[in-house]
Image 1 (tube, rainbow, N blue to C red):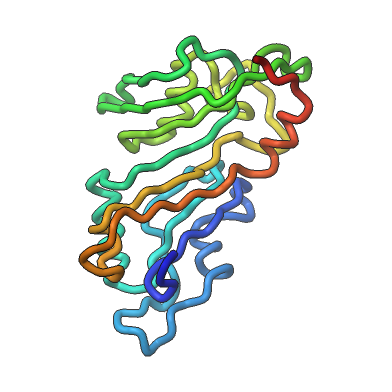
Image 2: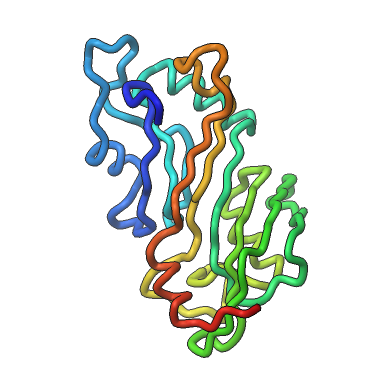
Length: 213
């Protein structure tokens, strides 16, 4: 991520037995050399992903990066995008889910990407992008249920669903960091945009479906 001695982004898998954030940082990332000012002993995640969610994870490698990045996430200055496959059709192609969770405000913007007909799953599958504006526990999973189209493989919030061999179909695919989150890039730097593709399991499942016009 521009200057790997300060922070990096890494793709996390969705199997909680293999891909905890801490294990990923400890085994898959190279620590910052000791000669770098403020170097951490090992890279550390600056935000969390649900253990069943795969995708982008931002990790700090210096104390300065840890402070700046953590502050940006806590202040909700970081914009995030998630891609999911939902079991069912969403009525509006774009919209906002405004459903409080645990007595706290919870907002999620969404945009439908594509719809598929699936004999395997007995109806419509919806490929969708979520843009959470708050960060409540299981927010996207619970808001998908509020849309009457739970996330494929979500046995916790979709009582009619069976466990899927590929787990939960929810993937962190985009992060936009404000200039304040990356001070090592200089005063004139703009936003830092990081994007990745959703996991391969998405293509495997959707290839067995009929895309709708």
